[in-house]
Image 1: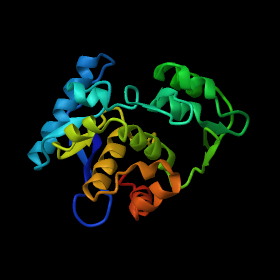
Image 2: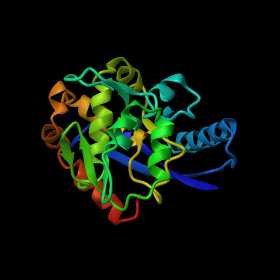
Image 3: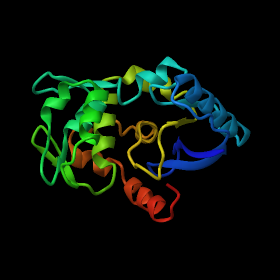
Image 4: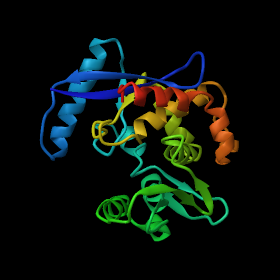
Length: 229
C-alpha cells in the first residue's frame, strides 16, 4: 500500500485547491506499465471516494493529454527572445545555488538531462531562482514553479480546456515527503484561476500572478505545517 495526494481545483470561494491524501495498492518497479497500474489503483481509490474522473499529469500517464501537460513536455516561447523551452528545463536551469547558477545552458537541454545535471551536482544549498534576469525567492514555496507552469499553459490553452473536464489531478511520482513542486498541483491552481477569469496574459508579471493567487500560498503553508503534504 502507498499514499499519494490528489489535487482538486476550487471552483467556488477563494482561489486554491483541495488536497486529499489517498491510500491505494502500489505496484513497485521502474517499468512504465507498473507505474500505470499504480495510477489506475490510485484513481480507483479516488473514484470510490467520489472524485472522478481524474487525470494523471506526468509522462507516465495512460492518457496523451496527461503526458502533454507534464512539465517535461509542456513548452512555452519567451516573448522577447523567441526561445522555446520545456517547463522542466527552464525550472532546472533557473536554480541558483550558493556556489553556482543559474545554468541557462540547460534551457536548451532535454528535461531529463537538465534534471540529471542539477540533481547529480553539488553546488551547495538552493538560494533562489533567476529566469531571464527576473529573480524569484524561495518563499512562497512553489511560487516560481507554479508561475513557470501556468505561463506555459497560457500558451497552450487548448490543453487547459481539455483538462477542465476532469475533477482533479494526480502525479504518481510526486512524493510530498521528498519534494513540494508538482505539475498536477500547478494545473489544479491554473484551473481555479481560470474559473474566476483570472488566467490572463498579465500573469506573466510575477507580482500580478502572486496577487491573483490570493491566499493560496498561505493555504499551502498550512498544509506543510500540518504535514498534510
